[in-house]
Amino acid sequence: MKYNTSSQVETYFNGIHQDFKLSSQYHRIPIIVVDNYIELGQLTALRFLEWVSLNPGGVIALPTGKTPEFFIKWVQFYLANWQSEMKNGILARIGLDKKLKPDMKSLHFFQLDEFFPIKPEHERSFTHFVKNFYIEGFGFDPKNVHLLNTYDIPEKAWPDFGKMRNLDEVFPDGIIDLGVRVQKPNNERDLLKQKAIRLFDQFCQDYEDEIRTRGGLGFFLGGIGPDGHIAFNVKGSAHHSHTRLTNINYETQAAAASDLGGIELVRKKAVITIGLNTITYNPETVAVIIAAGQSKSEQVYNAVERKPGIAYPGTSLQKLKHARFFITYSATAFLTLSEENIKQWYKEKKLPENYYEKLIIAGSDRKKLSLIEVSRYDCSAKADDTPEWKIACEIRKKPLDKLSEETYKNLVEKIERGIDVPDNQRFLHTAPHHDDIELAYFPLIHHLVRSPNNKNFFVYCTSGFTSVTNFYVLERLENLKYLIQSKKITDEQNRLADYGNAQDDITGYLNGLALQDDDIKHLHLSTRLTRLFLNHIKANDLKTCR
Image (cartoon, rainbow, N blue to C red; front, top):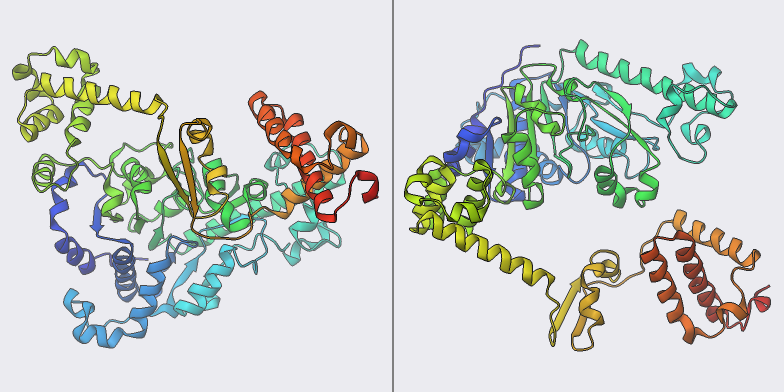
């Protein structure tokens, strides 16, 4: 299918933020920069609706989860207010053809990815998201929507699975080991697991074939993950990869943990995802990646400025002439600035005062020299042949040797401040939830808390129970039951009835942590749990509990 890829929307938004065009010579994929997350959603929605208006019946793939929140809100707004926006709103200012209107029901939609397995009706499943926001919210025709049902066994395969009708019955422990795909089954259960995995391997092939039969994707929209993943194509995914059943890495599991009840549940699952080559199969695909916030800036840099490589999934899009990155200013932190940008923004104080240090270090890396070696250079002869050094000298109006000495001195001071133990200080620690400090960065501040000369204050902005999964609670109870039955926890040994000895549990657990001994940690954790039970039911010993 031949697509119209022209865009007045991109021209319009490029005109709003012209100052960032100066650095485009470094970009292997064009970028458009906006001020904030809300404007990012607006730009993306307008570009999508423009493409739909120009390409009725087109093939599309859109993201799920947190990424498209404002994209969805803006699309719904413009669909509801199309005529008024065409008369005197932003659609009129952009100059879109008034005869055009997006025909959402004509589109063919393909779901990007899904956890394996997960019930389609699960409120955190991507299938549920598609039905809620795209079929109902955008008005897609359900007959043209291709979903990834990773839970139900297709009716044609029922004879191979007896009375089993879903994957929870095939994988009762929830653990998906894709190695079963090629291993010799040890028992009937392993054989059923192998059949299930191979069944969905074929499903993936059929899904890929369906996309290619339609000429490939015409419009792709996605986010970029903490490791640079596109859809579930994590770091290391081949650029020629197709739709497949695969595993995901720790970074991606951690990002999904809050949605699916904890990382111990997510790490059991596999995923189905379209491949990088699925996205780039059609050379005319308009592929848009959106990214907001400084936390995404390194991955934006990796995708936009690095040479193509499997360590950076986003670089696979460099082969598409219509690939774009729509990002916020904060997501540009790692992008290489042009000489014009640096001089202009440094003068306007849009860059930090010590930005020159970044330039000095970058030049030293380029030359493979230490800062000490650079400080001994004849700066007048050497600065001009290294762009970063040249710019640093100009914006600071100092010679290279002096700037190198300053940079070295500042780095040393930062390191020394980092390893110094502050004394006679007052610290205010804040956190959203009451378990965040303990679970997140407490190991980094314990030396502040243990010093008798420091005062530490902790402020939590919300209340509530510490969140733990059912799986974790059951595991702790099973372990406690075993330790009591094996008499590794006793009233006499652990002085369980005296809650004043609860500090022993903490000390013992920390010792187990330091020794990296799980048995010691579990013992003292179970001892604390026993004390809590005895205290709650007002019992004096374990016998009373029985």
